[in-house]
Image (cartoon, rainbow, N blue to C red):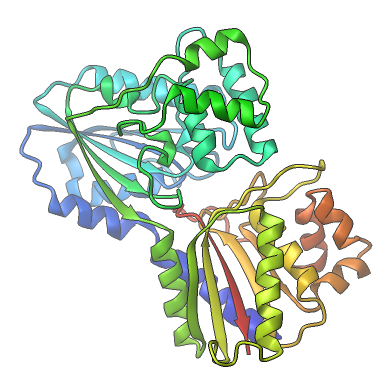
Length: 417
């Protein structure tokens, strides 16, 4: 089991390293002919600092001014000619508004003779916020909390948030007269550009009616004042924005497959679009692991093998514990693979911060559930209480990477010897 866990650690490190945004941003900028005099940069999201540093590596002092808006503890220091703002995630805060306000001030001075490089990564929906007229930040904070608790997926959440924001759903681009070159690191299954960071520079494909239907579907409590704001449509056409996707969960899964193969495992990517309840995903993956272990799939999966799934699950909060979707997958899977030999499973977020915790996710084996019990926790009860963090911490099964500087969804991997 020790060798399997060591191999899992290697796959985690190498796959994250492969999807760091630096190289992708550098290649994207080298392809672009910047034929106007002044270049400005605005970067938002969990990978904003790394993406900005990469832009400086290519363009240097050609950048007149830049702005980074990222999550707390995701900045790695000063960048010349850039202002760096750290803000709240997954719930926006006053610094989210400050970052958006600074961005709007920056682009308000630009003309058609300027270029704006807009670097977008996951997390921007919370980190980059300015409420529309008659909506308060407290309204958005409350609605975001309700959407997170009820199990709404990222597209549903962002459909609602776009209609409450002055900088989402293409509205930020409307404030900018300069040509915009948007480089996007995708954290949305299917790379839906109007949903990544809530599409601040992309025509909105969602409608006010859809946002209102989502509020009704999940019984989200909103005031009449907020409903009236949602009824105002977002921009559906933008003709001064060029967008390039530079990274996604597909690349993350492929990187994990390459790493696993180098370690002697036959890799199989089952899906790059997993989207369901986290604990159900854990049960599903555990069922696959058990069937591989008992030889059910010998005609399909040649052991040793690595079964890889990418995407983004949701957590429907029924308890008051601490955790994240990847930790919940891992704890659920730990119960499903209990006493199973020669099998480990990990689930991690590429950004290194799973939910409101300092863990990227969890790495479990057939003895994890028993270790959790030995340290005084009931794994079934902890799963029901959404308390995967403390259960996995007790058993030594948390994956701690620290902030990685990238954000391209999650992967779950089963390793079978």
